[in-house]
Length: 133
Image 1 (spheres, rainbow, N blue to C red):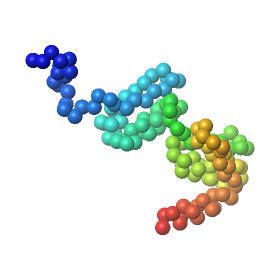
Image 2: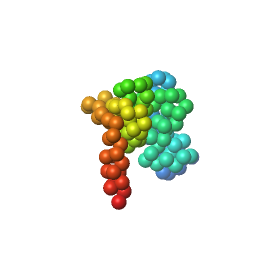
Image 3: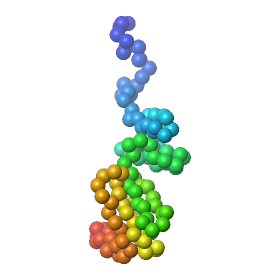
Image 4: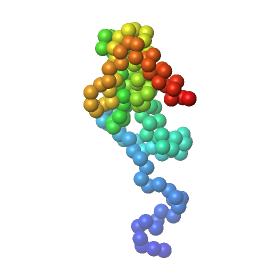
């Protein structure tokens, strides 16, 4: 028997990961490892995104360091927060189409927002259709 402290871990699998990714939330005052997302949900590279979406669904807010896209109407209180730029842009275009309101789309605190104007959805839809070909 070795006196080395690491040798006492004989029950751990050989390929055990001892540095699981973690996510924290200062609003909740907690930190979670992503073992559940990796092992049970088999989320792989999407584990952080899956946790962030689940956290938002259950608490009403995203955890720390979730780089979200914001779409905010400039005329009414409408708006969304999404993890993908495409989802935020799509909401902005649909809102502008139905309400004829301008919507500002931004990524966290990065740069100036992009303004989606009523009628922009038509050119974007044509661009997306061309991209799908």
